[in-house]
Amino acid sequence: MNGVEGFMYPNEIELQWSVLIVLYPFLTGLVAGAFILASLERVFQVQAVKPTYRLALLTALAFLLVAPLPLQLHLGHPERSYEMYLTPHKTSAMAMFGFVYLWYLMAVLVLEIWLDYRHDIVLQSQSTAGWKRWIYRLMTLGSSNISPRALEIDERVGWTVTLIGIPSAFLLHGYVGFIFGSVKANPWWSSPLMPVVFIFSAMVSGIAAVLLLYMLMTWSRKETIDMRCVDTVASYLFYIFIIDFSLEMLDLIHRIYEADESFRSLDFMVHTKLYMSHIVVQIVLGTVAPILLLALTQVLRLGESARKRIYVLAGCLTLIGIFAMRWNVVIGGQLFSKSFLGYTTYKMGLITREGLLVAMVLTVLPLAILWVLVKLLPPWPEKHSGALPDATPAD
Amino acid sequence: MSISRRHMLLLLPAAAVAWKHVLAGTPESAPNYTMSQHWWGMLIDLTKCIGCGNCVRGCQAENDVPDGYFRTWVERYHVTDYDIENPHVDSPDGGIKGFPPTKEAGGKNFFVPKLCNECADSPCTQVCPVGATFISPDGVVLIDKKYCLGCRYCVQACPYGCRFINPKSNTAEKCTLCYHRITKGLTTACCESCPTGARQLADLKNPNDPIHEFLKTHSVQVLKPYMATHAKVFYNGLDGSVR
Image: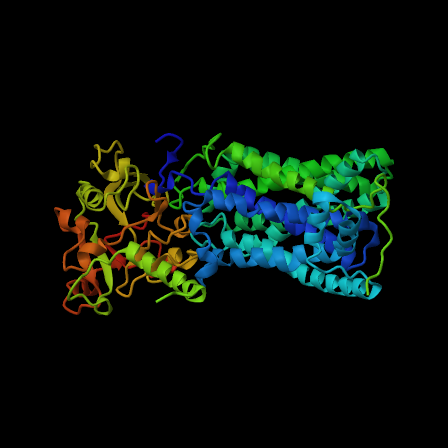
């Protein structure tokens, strides 16, 4: 059989979960990571990261809006997906997806963004004209009270929402890890460490994404990059990356030392079919290299431009590495037979429903949504278009 | 009589539900069959299997299984004297046309028919997000094709590789133990077509079923017992090398 080495059960030859399912944990990871970075400023009062606060929230929203699309495109019957809300199966880890997603989207992210931006939205609804005015008026949800008392309530409720949001972000991505980690039939996935590794890798990818986006957007606006901010964000990235890497190594060492019946099969796979994506891209280029680069900035007294370059390089490598990690989990977990006697090959289509082109569109789509969100809800004070008009407290 | 808008709003959803039932059709009736009186499984006597592939062909014909997918299949094992951890296994086209002569010299050769193990604690039903796959009260794992989302989580969760996605319906599919036959007092297509009686349908709730005598007098085993799925397909003469 083409692409098969050794013996596979005959129904195993075709892979069930494609590159779109690789994309799903990658996107939700960015959401969770970006939100946790935002919460640093709000809950833990880390003032240095304030310039990234709103951008992190908008990034999380843009990626969260796209996160269910790869799942919908993957389903054999997407028109039935609403059944997960109507008749969720209580014993299924996957059944909770809809609820966790909606909770995170509506009760945490949208609510926090709305509370944080409400003051700006109300002012915009009064100062703009035409269709923009209508959009902002709609976004006020009929609440135009921006008195100091009202804003104080916004602040307090927003703080509480962020506080609830932190465990929710952990839940969102830890839950994605549990979907894989709880499959006892698959030794590559089955591990209680899986949700924890997913959470930390999510934080790593989300922080790296916001760091890159902040630098890119500041550069494109011809503004000065706040080095205190990026240094702080990069140091968080460094420390969380070390925890993430340690967890992954713990998992690896445990597997090697225990060497159970699946080990020979998995070991063969890592040395052959997954060598490039696992050893080279994920571990060497995507983990060790960025950790070393970030370590340089912690140890050496480097100049501003050198640090900026290192952060951009480390951020890009991190995102590539985390994507490779998702790839190795999802695709790698399906390349070997559950008989441990053979291996199959993943053939990715180009312009099929679950092909490369769709995956690329879904990767770019959140950035397009983010662009719209940034235009609609600028995360920073608009210098050239004039400051926002002074607040006129309503009674 | 005029219907008010309020009544119309109440009637429309009810009519939609009723129409859904009409479209769903009437389930095939099986008179004189009481689910609670049965608990189905299967006995496979490996000492009798000759690898002819009749069971695979019978299943494909009975259940309209698409080409390249298998509700049941036969594996051929070749194990050398002591290396039971490294058997050589083949199953050309699921063994549907039988097997070519073996090229392996020495050691032992034997055939292992596989099918859904009708697990009492099945991982596949556990993970289904909408409960489209379920264990019937008579112990058969079934799939409601009109309800399945096609998410493929159940395919991943099955330790035995027994599930696949039917490319025509885009829903999960597996052996139903010929539920449409056994509820009418018939045996499964694979058991019916086996020329040596290596496959025997077993009703574990029926005290008169010969399975009970067989289980008492033979050393039987299930596949991957460490998976704790409480499989109900029992193998007689199962070699330790079988996965």
